[in-house]
Picture: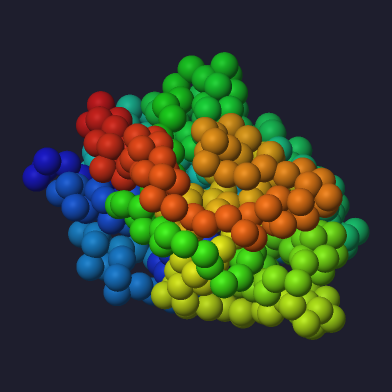
Length: 373
């Protein structure tokens, strides 16, 4: 293990680990470092600060400015890909023969370069991106942004064929693993990495209902609005909505209801406290893609999880959740769970299932085998 080096190309600076994809990236780095892997991290930056935490975990950390100029919108290559092209990055990667792990389709531009044809190239699949962008387009209210999302979805569908050039694909859920294996035959399922090495849920009853998400993302704004309008305003229980950068229209909606409180941009410690002290964590999504890391977070540290069926599509986590798909069913489940106590049996059941499927240690060892292959 002393001689195992790995290049990781990240679509963003993965610290702080406070939203979806970067949670997986950061905690995988943390686990690989613990196993002695020497990591050469390459980050595209566009708003996040350089990180001493990452520099303490990696042999080196290199930063590259993402090219967000308008001209990239008119290229055949998807914007999320061509805006992350860097000749400086390619020159650095060519200085050795170490394996290269690319985080998402975003970072796969170099697969078109024949100089990497014999390298161990690995892609972590965070979403089936063309499906994700198509669904975002359906939810988008701004006509210009909706046009961009539809265009990007078409480009991503065509660009996805580049994955055939990678030696390995590492997927997050079974549905996406089956899809990619059917097309390219090089996919392995390794679930998301996360901050928990054991269950830390509390027994008993919590004091509030919680919805938490990155509230700057339109999909999460839509989910929050639906829950507020159709579910949360119909309960007398206190509701907390927590997340990053909520827009003005969502703040105004929340302010209408006395039982609903907004916690804006809570630090990691506060978010964990909100989840652990919640009685019910409610999650709702229209996107059957990837794995919702906030669900994994809530199962490891919270009490009851009430979700719609789309939230657990492609995973085995539905057996640990209460599931509702209509507003009436959400309201009914909340009434029933309000009087229930979260007990040792529930914690033991979670531990048995999560320690098997979502063990950071087990999944780290599986990732290392792919890196060494």
